[in-house]
Amino acid sequence: MALSAKAKKLITEFKKNEPKRSDLKKHGKEIKKDHDLALELWSTGDLNPRLLATLIFDKKLLTEDVVEGLAADLMKQDETERNHVSEWLLANQLTKDKKLVALMETWEENPSPVLRRLYWYHQARLRWMGKIQPNSKELLESAEAKLADEEPEVQWAMNFCCGWIGVYESKLRARCIKLGKKVGLYKDEVVPKNCTPGYLPEFIKIEVDKRK
Image (cartoon, rainbow, N blue to C red; front, side, top):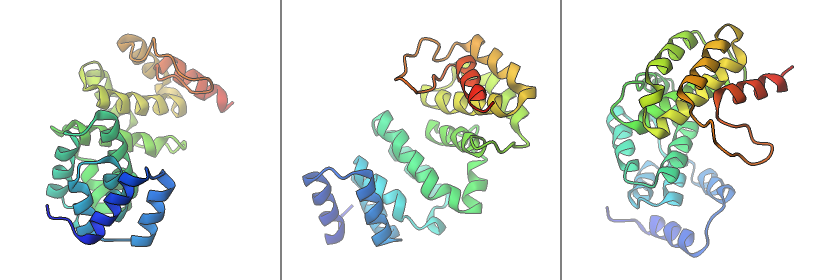
């Protein structure tokens, strides 16, 4: 894609001085919405231009085909960067529009691991502030069937979601802990001090104790 002078200026700036996340958000506030510029920045395949793109996309133009194309592009990116960009896309665009939220809710079985991860991460986000959701039992049943064999990046979001179900929904807590013990995901993970481990039995215990 041929880049406009505006896109070239931003990209040159990012290469010259590594921007902080606050710098990117400042650019996003100044630009507000510029879908064409967002697509130009996205086309570079680089982390910072793509993060800025997630701030200035026009959500009304993020059709199913466009989002699936973005997800396919992300599969060519490093996993850590891919997850970072997709989470910004979720927070800044996909959760801001009812049609996009409805679209996200269809991604549980999507062929794209990026979109499946976003499905589970969105479900986790709905819960981590303690808001009980009506589909928790169904999600847990799905996790019980799929968690062990999912792609690692999807596993993380699925496990994270089950963790919050276990924290806030006492009736399902034992099943979440049992699932964690059965799969053993993150059992041997070493986490920095004051960080909660991902292993479900420990995660749930620590987070429940915090709320007592």
